[in-house]
Length: 60
Image (cartoon, rainbow, N blue to C red):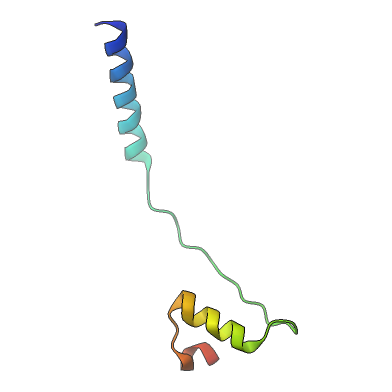
């Protein structure tokens, strides 16, 4: 094989190995802290917007 052909084979083997080793990322863990500075309305908005909570679940 030519030198160029060897590099092409190596690149393909490397890509195949990388593809085999990839997996979906794990989910994040989010902690909301009850403090004196963050308004409750903001916390409820965050829960509804980013976590798809309904109003009742966000209040609890």
